[in-house]
Image (cartoon, rainbow, N blue to C red; front, side, top):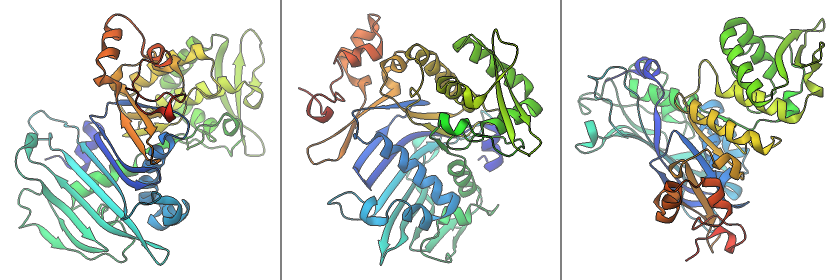
Length: 415
């Protein structure tokens, strides 16, 4: 089996399945056969942002702890589904990427966490990490199984779970076992999962934040809002100039008048982002550039990260961008999805026109107010239209999807 280092060398793991229970409007929803690029589509209030927040919640649990992630969402009163009972649950199924053909890396790995509340304090009601046999054969094997801070973990490669099983109590019931034990070398599968989730990035890029003048100093990755865009440009200029030049080439293809972007340190220690706009000789400050220019630059920087994350989320990339730029941005996302798995939301048919049905999940709220999900890839009518040369976004706008139309019963399927 591969260890955590092997996984990083061979490429990122890939999500295949996501199940969410009792998380706001997501009382019970499951996404299967998740593509490298997945776009969530649906009316306002259908639950697209809530799916994103489920990813963010799990990532924050690993980054800053369960208590902070729970409290900032209003605790059980605001976080649990209305009328729902039982814990909030998130379950992911994924496969690790092989580095050598001979390694048996086709195991489906499943991680499930259930969180509940007692007296206003959250606790991990259940946490389990398991895998199936090679190529799906055999019964699943529990690598880690915990309830309220008590349980066991399998060390080593897990080939003999009984021989390598250890009872390891945690310090508190709100401690995530994967987060604690995933820092120990003797648990390579747990380490691999922890690194996977800890590496997720869920972004909410803002043109306003990208206009800022942060303190000088190179930074490797964009933050959630793009407020350190100048720092990342500085880093790319110093460490990956060819990548930065490639980003500029792509930016000029989308916005032809843009020549280059620079990040210059100022005497007061701040970093000044400047954009050279042809045919003018003097560059303009980023704070005076258009929202669309800054957003496109930020997306290109994020999508062409020299060290891409295993998972990347971005909400409504069409905001502030001209509609004719969106087909190209979707193509950039498809290309980037070869190295990092991408989730995004959209209301734009122009963005959808670059995609296939398997890239899309349509969400809507049922009569009870809970989010439901379907994919147009199973719709024979949509498939037939696309085989005849139709574009996915046009089919959506013309009402050919069986669900997701905001003008018909909150987007519920029409029969």
